[in-house]
Image (tube, rainbow, N blue to C red; front, side, top):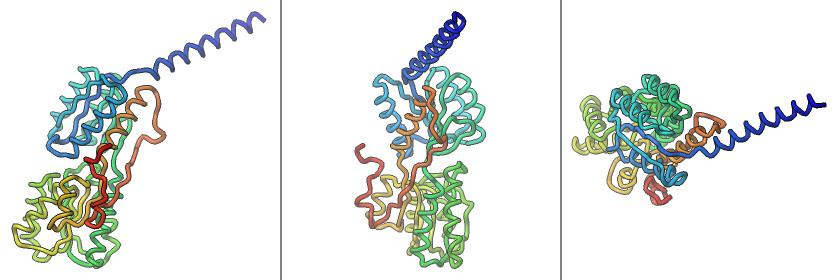
Length: 315
């Protein structure tokens, strides 16, 4: 009987110890978050930073949040992650310059006990990824373009930096355009660099090469705006331009005299909030049911832009 009592006491002690550990783990505070994004010159990434900061402060009003811009420089991003490790942050939100090459830095951060959440694009080795359903976004934008062109015409897919988000958008776009045999894709490999200037340069090249161009799918809104400007400068019209982002600039463009007809929206604020929540849960031992969290995209057009709750809407 004594043996049974001892065994019971040992089990109870072990369980109690486990329970106390769990309770302690659940109370682990969020003290610091580090964020590294492609460019803080892009309103999209500014919104991600602000959304993440708001969520971190909601969890802990004294949480330190540091957001930095990698400027699409791999070495710079490696250094930034090293700095976050030295600063003992709890969670890193990572918008990877190169989804595969970043892996050694991700492993180093995880070895230091930091939770790494990939945001907007995938990153090898990250604990979880929160991003827009980019395949769906590409499908929405290019389905709209195909319908506007009545299933026939010459179009280009204005590509961008080869991160997972861009690759997925192009994949979705191609799948939709393939449903219309009357649509001919003249180019799909030009890098508009994700910027207005890059989009303008790419479009100038297209318009020089192609005397007849009916539609352009740009992988993001800055490129779409540059594309529209280039067409106007070269006095070319009747081109249906679609893109992905649903950015504040595109809201204005859809309400004014541009050739931009639609943009498949993202919600960087909600994406960042979700990423911080997932990171906080994971540092307390709670894993999400799925480590790839896809946020749905909706199409913003001239018809519905008035009711669109954009990036800058109060949350």
